[in-house]
Each structure stands twice: as structure tokens, then as C-alpha cells.
Image (tube, rainbow, N blue to C red; front, top):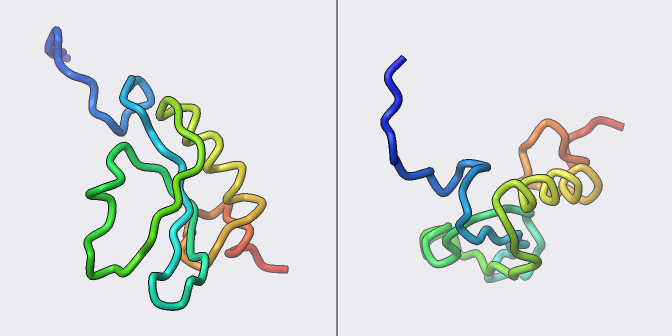
Length: 92
């Protein structure tokens, strides 16, 4: 398999050194807490039409924040956390 040398690592890769943020997303109109998430770019994560307010929690590497996101979603998942391990989506 051909592998380019010196190619950049995508910012969503666990190998990325880009700062990644854990955030809580709230509905701008109601203030309802809707989901946990991670992103490397807070300004472009959601379009304005989504009417979300992002509250930044910790920051770190992509790998660290993905692991932390999984832990909080499994314990405190919200309506828009659709991951299969989300507490919100588990029956019972």
C-alpha cells in the first residue's frame, strides 16, 4: 500500500496534536442542556441556525478528549448524544 511521507495528520485523528475541546451544548432559546461533544474548532462546529451555545469544559489532545467525552456521555448523556454508550439512549 502506498503511504505518502510527510503527510499532515487530520485534526480528527487521535494522532493530531491540535487542541481539542470538550463542550456542553445548550439550546440558545430554552437553555436546555442538549449534548456533550468534542471539537478542534469551536467557531465552526455548528452553524448559527442550530441556535446552540457551547460551554467549553477541559481541553487537551484529541485522544484525551475523546476518552473523557465517552466517560461523561456514558454517565450523563443527553438527548442529542446518539452514541450507543450514551446513558440517555440506554433502556431501563
